[in-house]
Image (cartoon, rainbow, N blue to C red):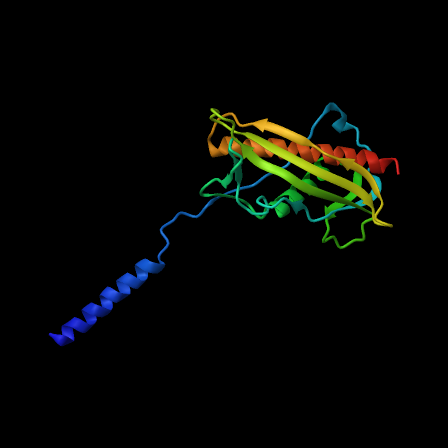
Length: 207
């Protein structure tokens, strides 16, 4: 009887240990932000790129937003995060990559890359993220995405600031589904960074 009890006890312990470490939760859904291709009748006429190299520095992100979680702000001003979803990376990395995409879709400068560039850039762009959340109004069902960025472009020689930009964009989600909310995020971020890319190219083209 003792010989039978030992294997049975080991099997029970093994089952208990397995249940302690087994994770039955589904992995979070990852969302990616992408620049919207810009097209116009003028696309057929190629404008020579300004011979300027620009480095987009690592973004500074407000506390509470410096994460890969997707933020929501409620009428009583408390912030939370949507469950089961994530950005494709930490927000500073996601928006730095998106900013590079915006400049590539708005050609005007010779070279634009993240600050880890292998070439020495003559100019730099610094962006601070002060708002990047879905905001719910009292009595409302679907949120409005608020993207507020502070940007400075300057020269590497002496760190002189040549221009400042402050896009403050609000985009309403069509409904309260996560796909619609992320679409509003994408539209708001795209507009904000497009404003910065356009302003930066215009500023540097006259230097």
